[in-house]
Image 1 (tube, rainbow, N blue to C red):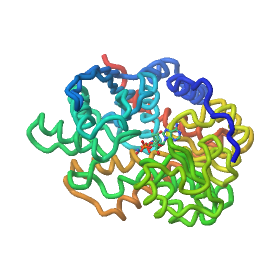
Image 2 (image 1 turned 45 degrees about the vertical axis):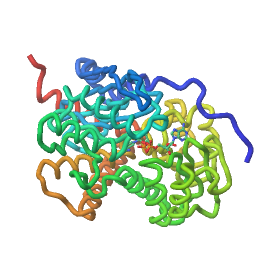
Image 3 (image 1 turned 120 degrees about the vertical axis):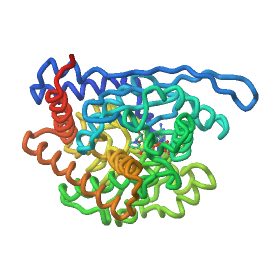
Length: 421
Ligand code: NAD
């Protein structure tokens, strides 16, 4: 295939994007100015610079963040990202989106996010473990089962969550599983958590497709990203009878209009470390412009911009990643009649099953996978239906409707609690 220009030019500041989305929803809600100023400001921001001993014996200082945007509706909740691009504004935006996500799903949480500026692929397992344990210790002053409960995000997974659980447990002298979610099953993880974000994406994709008059069975699906979220989407879309025609990761993409076989792809990635080369090669830029029914960006932010949005040929976009569309791209796609299921709705399955995991840990009573999945499906479907109903009534996008629903719930919690002192 012919190379086209990469999508992103100057990537927008994610925090400005989050604030602009908030302002648009607040305007539409006629939200009181006094409540706006409160909800625009992250409640707590912790920056830590901490030393880690590297394998060669030298010491490097890493920078980490934990931002709690809101704790108005319950403990803060949100993932931890390991990536070179992590900065305070990115973490702030992701924390604010977590507040809206938990409110939209009706979970008794606020919103938080954390991150460490690092390239996890360039660190050995030992270095990653020391980095994770020290970062957990640095942020221990603000996290805890009743205060703020981290979870996986880009560059982290069950292994890192296990190290965090163990570190915090060592501090207190007993096992404290509820301090973090997305853990391995052996230490209080939940059945269904590993695939929860992807399952939620597929549930809302099915509902949105039905709304547009087509079925997942037989639909052509393109997925960007083959990590926690993307790989699960490929698997579950295939199980639902969809034809996944292209998938990519940071190394490039693989395209087969006849459909990719998930099991073969998974084994190929185990050996080679990338999806690139599994079928006809496509770049990430080309992948986003392939003709398809459903496009699931599940890699990272700012992938669809004003430059490539006019060339996107999907009928439906389901945001597995956080912030994959710039605001300009969002407007262009809206005008073109492409239905976009926004991140705070589409990828909320992860935090929903994280909530189930936390409940199970606190009760020390564990559920079977079928129960987890059916509860997840119920909550995701309810959130989708409520958002679609508001969007239809108000004649606004699903993104604006989802933000309006979430913000009005957080605003109400602030109003009924009142201002202290
Ligand atoms: P991950 O690190 O497991 O996987 C990321 C994938 O995207 C990898 O395949 C990587 O190669 C690819 N990728 C990264 N940068 C890329 C680029 N510039 N171009 C193309 N591919 C690229 O991360 P994840 O946990 O799957 O998270 C992916 C997105 O989903 C993020 O935006 C994250 O915030 C969001 N998310 C994750 C969860 C979760 O439960 N893990 C929940 C909600 C939202």
